[in-house]
Length: 416
Ligand SMILES: Cc1ncc(COP(=O)(O)O)c(C=O)c1O
Image (cartoon, rainbow, N blue to C red; front, top):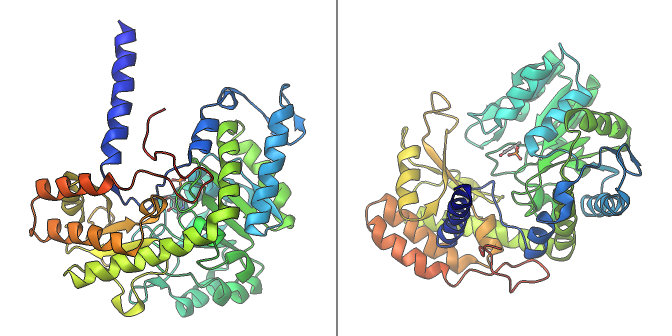
């Protein structure tokens, strides 16, 4: 009887593959991995433990795992030009938890953006579990960025142990350089959550927080960095022991198939990262511009809309959720989000669009025009969702191959 259930489950997975191959996938926190990454993700590594530290494992059988992890560390240090890397966290949230556990004590405070201002919920949750107070960093709504002058005042007054820049909704580089001095005044740690923009940082197409003064960078390995789902920390050598020990405590079993997949992704970035990141930012700008010209309201038109992979569209009071459902009916996948001027987190006036996955499928500026047409036509009732879905299905037939990897003939959404 359960063999039938297994078949049903596999059938759902295949249907999911088929469905998402016909969609325009614009969730800003997702991406697709290359066939080489997908193959190692399905390897025996996913059955194994390698508890402990490199070449100092508690369990036996790890000689090739040590080689894989030594290479992963080397590649990550090279790509990010950083003294130390820890790839043990299994997600960006866990990377933040590892950092909070390593660098704060209960009773400390951390300054970071709230969810309404684009911060991630893990800022508050990691603070809560560690017993530290999260102090909201002041936000400048007009410039859609951290407010430097007000933040300086807050940091001088509160002296937070960590000032955490970076965000989930991030259009422009954050003021790392600008806040470095004031954080140093009281011996605080300037950190940067690069979960969203890590691939752009790796490709040299956003800010470079480590060079600008951040001492620790946390991130996800699967958003603009197109690797397997996971987390990572980059830091100066002086924090390496605290962070490695914390990762060991917090994660313990770190999913080695994911680490091997990350190593392949790092090679892909070393080879193709600059071109990819450049095209991502061009595409985001092009999409925003087209949406604007077609009558929608991507925010920050006077600042060129975006410098990242994201475009944030103001749909109007509390209308973001409905808009995201309507787009979904047309096979355009995006998420609603609250904007800084919304009264609370679940009153979403915006939708967030990310172009990193469509870029990985080889799309460039002309394709952004087609995507903007469909989004605007659906949301402004110029085209039925059925009509848009049919056009999108046909359009997507031309974008089924993965780019920026060593086998770009591979079918992006094939089930294997
Ligand atoms: C700024 C930021 N930090 C952390 C995370 C958490 O990353 P993950 O989903 O890998 O746990 C996210 C997720 O979107 C994020 O936007």
